[in-house]
Image 1 (tube, rainbow, N blue to C red):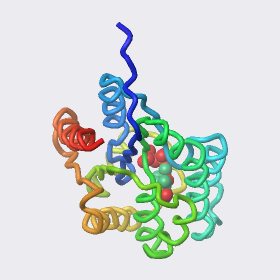
Image 2 (tube, helix red, strand yellow; image 1 turned 30 degrees about the vertical axis):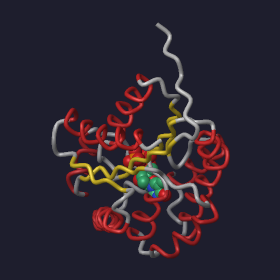
Image 3 (tube, protein in one colour; image 1 turned 60 degrees about the vertical axis):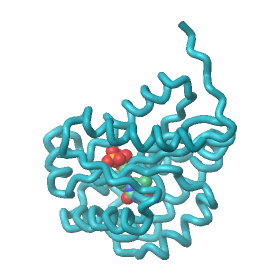
Length: 217
Ligand code: TYD
């Protein structure tokens, strides 16, 4: 049976955050299926990337050959990819009543560049204001797993590490502290999800927050 697409007056925007290896992908796919089953039109995105221009920026910023990249360049490249994504996909998607889900967004810049690279939250906020304006997620999930466990999980998969993943453990630990700081700063928007339990249990927590959001739309 063809499902009728529900037309929301205004869509919504959900982001997933966490250290490298925090297991966002599985849950993002489950949430996508769940929302589609509800008849919603889902737009699934990732950062950096999600647009042809953004994917080129992604290559530039993650390429292991670009070891000489200064921290300001790095922060601005992430913001540039984000500006393009907000302009051409996220904002139009929300306005068209779609469910927009993004694997990472501005909180990654706060955690990785602001705290991990020690550029400071204010610097990241200032630059990203130009990139995103008032386009902030309705809901953000912080997949809570400490940096060492997350990296061990990532390494066990045997995938090659990109320029950011190859950073020292101290950097990844600061990123984790950064996320914890963000949850304290924005408790209404950012929800901590314990990912040490089974994937089904993890999804139950996510689903509860999403159902509550859907009721407000
Ligand atoms: P990706 O392979 O997408 O990582 P993951 O699968 O863990 O999400 O690579 C994105 C990398 O870029 C990841 O290490 C986090 C980092 N990053 C930043 O440092 N700042 C940002 O603003 C964003 C969006 C990502």
